[in-house]
Length: 171
Image 1 (tube, rainbow, N blue to C red):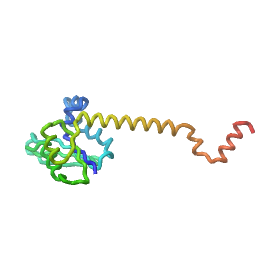
Image 2: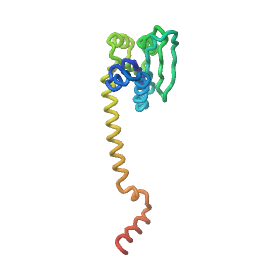
Image 3: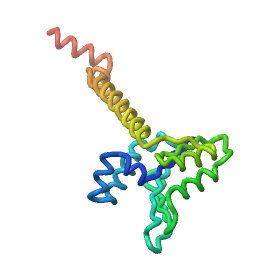
Image 4: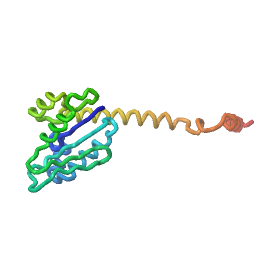
């Protein structure tokens, strides 16, 4: 099982396009992050994005599902790191799960390493997703090109093709 856990604000503040969006509209930056990740949701068996809400007075932890992406907003006084550490602790020692945590926080990386999880930096995650997107685009373009070469020819029965060829040759 492949499980990716993302420190949401860490990624938003690390990716230029999202950082610029966040200056104008943080809600939209969060939406764009989740939307971008949802394009790749079949690459992982489980995907969780955690956002800090520790400065929201009276805030309680909330969870929602967007496609297969679990989105968690922490409660007041709790940081995304705390939730990520709790999740990785729950899976510590599981040999059938490969956990990846996307964060640039050095302290958090050391903690998740001690729990058997792997880290991927925000720039590594962006590069990986861009590479996958590029590969998908190339494969899609090749498939479209191949499927548009004589598509009618592939759909016609042999007898019909022969009859059309006879007409073409004036027979």
